[in-house]
Image: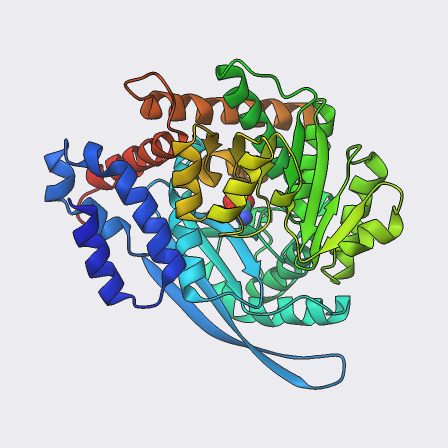
Length: 447
Ligand code: 2IT
């Protein structure tokens, strides 16, 4: 297998699908060497099969807004790979959603889910619906219209969606209600990230952020460092940044930045519990403006329009909003300000040249599919509880999450340790995830 040749063929077949091609390129360049040591992979054309989704559903979603106007969006579900279990992955509602974006996310999800130790395949879905400025009633009507099509594609042993950007507990509630109405199936395990009264798992909302901090702790520990007292820059102010902020503060770190599409809030003395709670209010408002944090807490948070979190001096950069949100210039600015650690929480949060630069400059860098896997892992734990018709206590979920993140870190070390002893976490995560999916595909024949 030659990465360059495969990429050329894929680019010709899927022109303009930039995010998808970027995600595939990153994985293929990591695994090329290992792949070529296994002629059985080549014989079964594992890579050629693995880079294409099993299937993609595309559907029209028509709904009526508060003014009585008819609106039409596009909805998708990408069922990427089911070699190790039912399709599993979030739904993204964002105006920029395209098939390319969901294919990149479904592809990443396949390897991430393989790392969690749980039996979950990879999927992703969503819509170009823009939640910004929408009322609760509009959100509900859109979710119901979206489920009118999606329900035929999903099920507890088939495909289990969850949240992602623009889809949180509120949206999952509306989606779950409509699913039950349409399917007349009352299994609790069709979606994860549900409310606590209808099958949700305690700690699922916090899990992506908590897991990311557990992973970062292991990475720092391995490098002989301690997170206590370190300054953490997060981006966004959504569910992921919220969970990460809670755990970072619990572990004795200082969260000095959050951001939004409008700019950055610098929080010199570190984020407070009141500010963390306010992140939830900001998310629920659908205004999508981080400036509101500075308006509410003017003494603590300083808002700068048009700037990113990476302009704020910090020790650990944690992209936690959107793909490609950290560029080469941002990486250079971080380094100039003394930052040498980056743990990606968003999926593909860093641009490829930024990752290459950080690795060359000796940053401790870990990729999203390892760092953020605690979210989907806890979704897997929610599925287990649903299947058992039980719910576990917070300590039990947290302990399992802890173990899973430790195991992901170990897999990265096992497959990513280089000749000079340093760990390449990108390689480690990609090879570990790939080996599991490839082996599962190989053993189940040519299908
Ligand atoms: O990117 C992700 O892993 C998620 N959005 C969570 C997916 C899930 O099924 O919990």
